[in-house]
Image 1 (tube, rainbow, N blue to C red):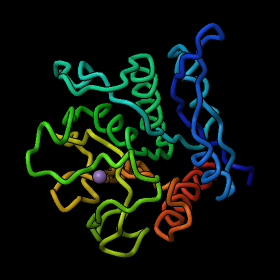
Image 2 (cartoon, rainbow, N blue to C red; image 1 turned 90 degrees about the vertical axis):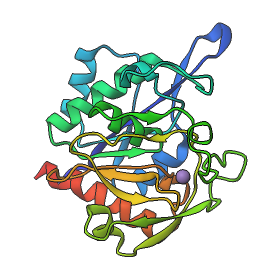
Image 3 (cartoon, rainbow, N blue to C red; image 1 turned 45 degrees about the vertical axis):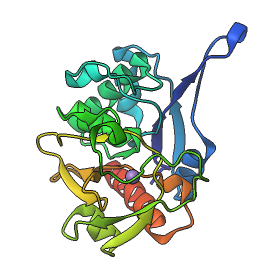
Amino acid sequence: MSTPLIGLTTWRKEAGASGASWSVRQSYCDAIAAHGAAPLLVPCSLTTERLRALVDKLDGLVLTGGGDVHPRFYEDKPGEQLDDIDETRDEAEITLARFAIEASLPLLGICRGLQVLNVTLGGTLYQDISASIPNALLHDHKGEPATHLAHPVSIEPTSMLGELIDVHEIGVNSRHHQAIRQIAPGLQCSARSPDDLVEAAELPDMPFVLGVQWHPESLHQRPESQALFQAFIHACQDLQG
Ligand code: MN
């Protein structure tokens, strides 16, 4: 069995006169590599045809964290709290997610990645949790270290996530100001925060299509993060046959 090749989507950083770069935090790469797979960075400026060619070579796809998805992708108007929009990235990631699902390729969405997965399948987002839901918990803890456990999530025991983590509640970090509003048709909630927001969702009847609203790559030493990455990489290996 060869080493699974896992595509990681990237975020664009403008660098003045040198031009833009497409990058991803090392913690994502380390988490994938630690479980025996090889991370491959996918630039989001590629054409649909090139993205297709890449997906054909991959054994799995990670939709990484980042800024907000433009609301036009879920038929909403931009509100005042939108932050860090990159429609080139939105289009590339939605295209990649669609190709991956069509090919039954294992897909792990992280933070923004869960939101991209939901939008790809026809769901909508809260553009800003605190502006939309008056009594919501604080979910935007970007000022804290990424290892800070901000709130618990309760896990649906019969979900794939519940089966692979095997506990009903875990503490998670929380570095998001947006969240799933209407969950997409076919997507099932697999974890909720105490204020009843979707913190994880999955596509049943697929080998592995799961998004989590927290950042397991920043909590990599915790057993539930290990179990999550291990199950994802195993699904990628199974695809190789
Ligand atoms: Mn949260």
